[in-house]
Length: 111
Image (cartoon, rainbow, N blue to C red; front, side):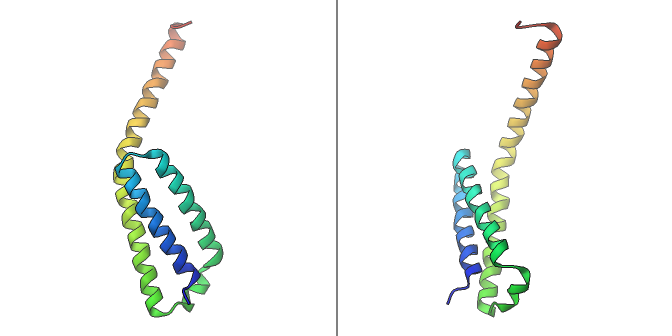
């Protein structure tokens, strides 16, 4: 019988792969959607797999869990390599807009 936590980790792993594909394609809406899905699974995992229950895994499932977590973390690093530059561009754009509004307010431009 498959351990429920392993099943949840496998689902999270599949979603993290899809998140990586979305990030590589600059599909930010899809990435956000998938982030919500993985967050729901993470919350469920926290409820259903408390640390005290982890000793019940046999060695094969423990190794499987480790591999899944490592893959999820690797996907996350790669996703961040795609999202960080985009986020910096958004910050720069927003900062520029804020400066422009400040100048407009200070000098009454556009009123």
